[in-house]
Image (tube, rainbow, N blue to C red):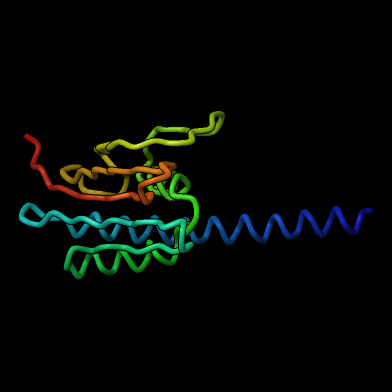
Length: 150
């Protein structure tokens, strides 16, 4: 009994540490993506899940910086659960939104986040998303904009 409890604890520790490491890699990639935003350069990526083929793709809209971020999104996000991907990006941006004690089956919308830690205060990030709808592929689209504040 002790051995099986220890084994379960050890396995959960391994998986939680790898999830944290993966999320940190995603956050680091997001910060680099945001820092590449300048006054004359907005960026946009779109991560799309397709449940019918258990696949995902990322569109970088022909931007090399966005292409690098897309590679990180492909490596460090869920293929199955777009809601988890949205939550991970929001956590990286230190956005104050919690889905902890509720279940959301379907949701779409857009959020704009200002004053992201470790990022120039003139950079804002808009996240447009949709998940849970039967007839539409789930997605998270992350766009950036530089706006000089007085």
